[in-house]
Image 1 (tube, one colour):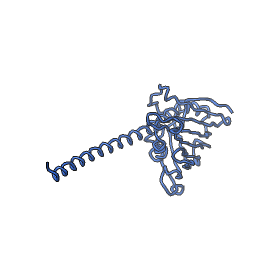
Image 2: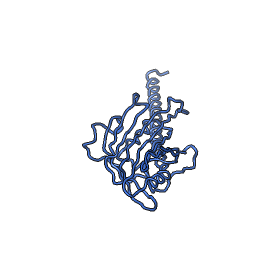
Image 3: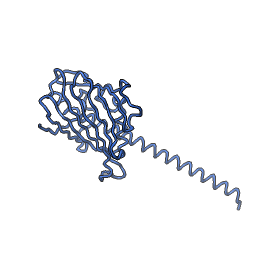
Image 4: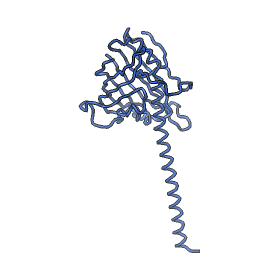
Length: 244
């Protein structure tokens, strides 16, 4: 089994790179293992300066992943028989998810689609680790597309800087194409397009974190104004009751 370190991630696509890949900080190293002549195992990690909850909220936003990830053109839960009672993101939720991406391999453009069973799992300490496993149950383009997301809080390992928590996101998937697409071409496409998607998840997570921080700051500011106003009213009432 051979391993190649690549700048790669997730579903391949033909969408032009909409993100700046020049920053060393954003360099994304992903390992691709040749598990068989026609299959690959893709593993990648990224550290995001946001809380586990912020990142988790993006990964479990199943019906709106197309908003966050530019290489997805469709993402939706289907067949409610496979959806458990509860809510996405609760750590034990299960659903059947249909996704379609936009691909361009050797000049041939098509939309690769896959239907997967998704299963959320909480670690011993759900505030520090959670995961989402997925297994392909139907696809016109893949005989295998099975893997797992693992989200781990890095704050307890000295990664929290200036009060900002960090979350480590690990992605692993076993891929085997179906039909005329050679796995070598698929590997090349992934090498080219994976950074786009990973940075998209990072960008979306940071947006959530910033919105929450701004909301908290606004709430704090409003609280200060209200407290100041109440204090002034109290002083006025006291002054009326105790004239000099």
